[in-house]
Length: 630
Image 1 (tube, rainbow, N blue to C red):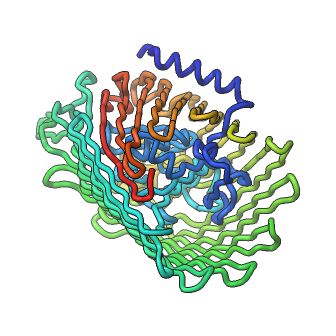
Image 2: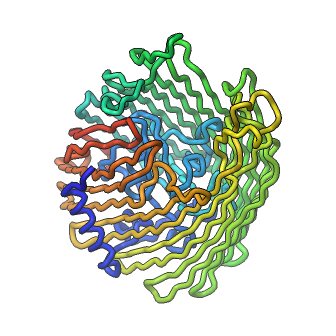
Image 3: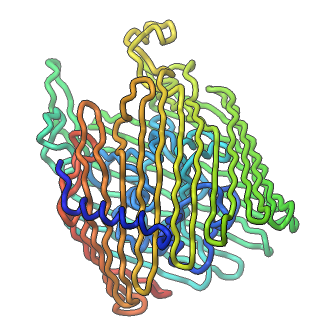
């Protein structure tokens, strides 16, 4: 695919952004340049800390950025602001893979309100089942994090935080319609009174879509019908503060996704029949009960009990079902040793259950002990974490990280971080018939990075380079000699035979001047199989995103250009593409505004995965109401 004019323009803007780094802002995150206050994050140490003090590479995507981005999905937001690379089996509503710093989809932890989510059989979270309507902010830790969050935090951790009530009663609502028969609506209420805080939201998205599989690749599953989806998401949070410094809370989120996709059945002659109505019916639930209390000026304790389920039914009338259930208990204690010295001690218990992998129910338990330290020493900062996991199936793993930063000047900070990580085998890896076995070991990784952060007023910039070596990759190996001696593995099995090296650089920037906001995020990635020297499939060597917004307070207009480079896929090389998204709003009353956006305005042909296709140009128009004012 030839480079388009929008791609050439994007590269020119990206080069200008890098040359002008001293006058740009870092996007940990675009939202930072929009506030004179230092935002607070939790993900970097498991306890609240100012974003500017974080030693790790953390991106914060706040509520205003989520509202004004014009992005079409959670995955699109993460690609634009956190550099996440995507691999979707078609357009919106279809199964989406993701790569943070080039790590496998199963090597990134995803949480909602502190509860780990996703399928333990596939080893991934379903961004296609999530809605932007109920999210307050997203925190992304890029880099090694197993020392804090355990298994699978190789590429990093994504923490999604839903709204929590505060202040007087507030009502929000929105509705919009778009091409491809798309419709979206949401309503939410929040507030706090007499020691209680509350928040609840409901959203529904539908689209007729287009065929998920392209007709020009000879794929036997091609069906020219429309592969649309319907998604309904509901969430609620309720809290009670009986005394200052003590809060008891309960939260719950449920999502239902019904998405049509292309597949085929085969007759006795192995002839494909793709005419059926194949559907993926996915229901996810997360519920948690928590308590947080300040027991003394130096001791804060947190207790959380949570359950999450991921229930997928895919296919035709004889659909297959895979269900994951996770029960999680956490006790965490933060000890203030001094005003700028903190020790975090935590215990986590996790029980995972899977149904559908075999004819029975599979279970495993994990117990973990965590110790973390963070402290300031004048211009220097230190963060150290150590974690011990004991699993009933794949044994013991000790991981950790050590990082530090030094303020070279009031505006420039140098930071470095190194850590050991591991990815746990999925239930498919350990138990799927004719493939999995209990001798499989976790993947092991060692990562190091160094970065520079600069900030002055409404301008900032950052640059991070990293290197991550992963061994014992779990892949299919056709050699029965590398499998346990059993008839089931006559044609091979899962085996720890792969090694990978992930190296790259991330350059981010944003600048605010008057009514203008500029932001850029540039990622370079060299992801290779070190045994063969081949590039890992579906990872682009580069991905860039540049945004420009103009806001007068009454009306606003903006554009985002996202460029994705060529990617190797199974048996093919996918061409690069550039997406131009346009947006505009008009605040005709303090509480009301009209919204319009055009996604993929240049109508580029997008092939996110070989033989699959994304949507073409899609125009949207809608209205939004906020009782407190927009």
